[in-house]
Image (cartoon, rainbow, N blue to C red):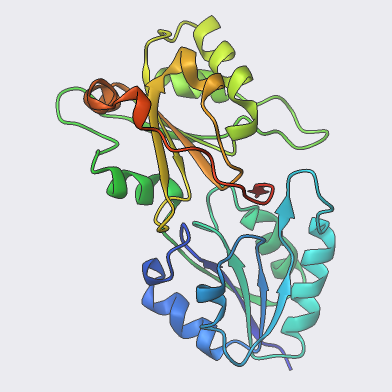
Length: 256
């Protein structure tokens, strides 16, 4: 028997932002391999499936990618519908290419189901477009995170080239990010929006200037840094004293 492995985007967190196709496949799945911070409400949709956590967390033991690949292949030989559930969209910082390539080399069927990525969910929640007619015509999705043994990233050049930048997996590197961008010529007063837990009820939003990014408190949830002049008005309107105290959270999950 050979089934199909579906690489499914779970979106930013809210279960009602799943696509119809994603919800249907979760209901049909016999086994679901899911990332660390997939919420219980989403996992409950896979009511008949065996659920296997294979996510990665900063500072904790992580499931090796080669082991995830093997588990997916083994499951596909036993079950008709296997779901690999990834936060956000599988094709953006989700290491989907590694799983796709491995499964295809094994002669197994694999399909990708897109999901809402955090930058789009955060923009919708803020009510601030990533682009703006006449002033912001380009957007880049980047991450400063580089895996062990990989070549250096060109994320700084990408951020400088675009009008708006969405920086993923950068909450723990705020000092490095701010220093690198300013040293490369990005104005220190460039507005940013720091968004934790986009789309969830406990979303936390802070506006600041790039130079102040290292001093912003975070609570460990999935965090996105949005950078660009489109956030200037929100920064000017934000009251510095209105930022809530950080909430205790588990270490942040990462995807590479």
